[in-house]
Figure 1 (cartoon, rainbow, N blue to C red):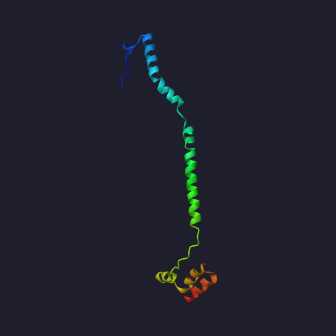
Figure 2: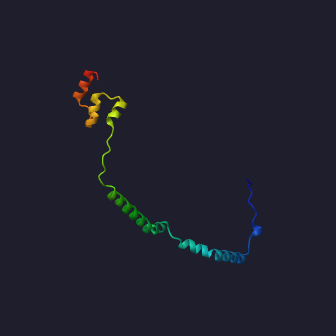
Figure 3: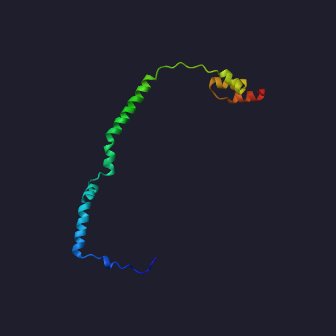
Length: 118
């Protein structure tokens, strides 16, 4: 960079001409400046979406409630082939009993399983 200052004295305007130029620029920019001043803020823009958001959420809620009410009929339980699953997993008899009863082994079950060697 150059250390010396640029001489801009050749483009200096007379005070009257400069004021006319500033006034012309401000006149041309007035409509844009007015539009910026009257522009809505972020909160106003978000607030404008309030009604559509409430309507959409009400519609989703109504559809969800309808789906729950229509789909809450008693469905028949589909039988599961647990015996085939136990065979595929090669589970021993005590483990099959625990699973079919829906419980975990008790201490007595574990001791007897260890003593019997499965």
